[in-house]
View 1 (spheres, rainbow, N blue to C red):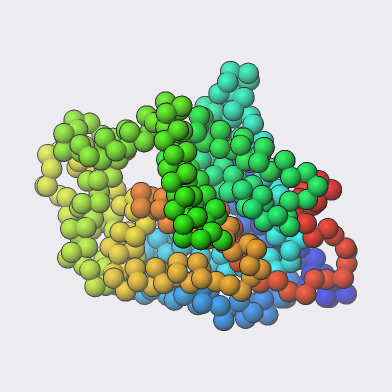
View 2: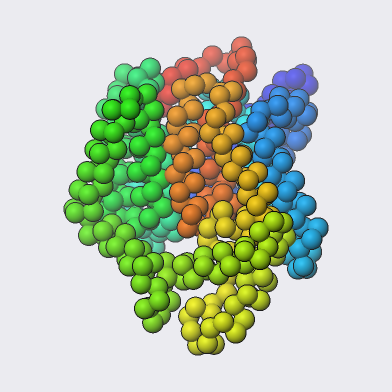
Length: 414
């Protein structure tokens, strides 16, 4: 009886993780309930210790723990209030979520359920958002902000599009209606190009497609794939004034930052980056400590710019994940973080069929985190951690009850 109850609690933790994965895109409250529910059910199952021991031997896990240790050590020498240090440490709970998901999604049927429900949840958003942009319906918010903000929406739709492409490429997963996946993928791509003005979405979709399409190709084939994707990018920029305007605006703001008279998204980012690099030059070895960046930045720019200059705007985040880690945990902390990324990318403990999708999504996040802190932001960080944990989880022997279809497409149709 205890074993049955324990297994049911693990199932409940998986259901809660699925709710969190989709709920985070629409409501932080729903997402939080799912996250907390999954943790509580996992700890109450009686299997937490056994399952965690099972994954601790994996390089992707012990490098993650080592990095969290570096962040914890950084709290010891930061010169800011302890509340600030603990809050900054708490933001890295996304890595603990990755470990938890890795420990519970060890059955294929649950892995495929999460992917299917994520596609269903994002498909509703993509269709409704596109319909609102076409003027067919009226929403309570702009179509490009239906899933909280445009950045989140673009990243979620890009991940969903990559899942569809992956399902097409892995032919054994296609099932009896293979046309569903390219059709659904087309819905996501169309929304990203014409509706959702998310540069992060553009990056994840483009780089993810490059990884997926070239995964099993020869070197010559990869060259052709890259050329084809560049041609597709040029076509998208030509037919979508919205996409072209967003990309051109970012390049212009970055390149002409010194000439700008007002605050802009990429202009201020360049100022933050340059000042952050100067701070790193003074604290490159150990950093300023966990939570110490905001104060270090304020001290660095004090008196550097006129009070009415937009460049004097302080920030709590350099909007670059790597610079942020380098500033607070020093060169060793950054090296450990990069080692964790490599370990995740090289993790072969799970079924090989899922690894290329995990790497494609991870590569996209690595690029977008040059302009944000997407590994630890609440929604984006947990979304990435969920996908990595689900896709890289090693499979255990399935339970005998109840029998289910092992096919991702059949699961969707059934």
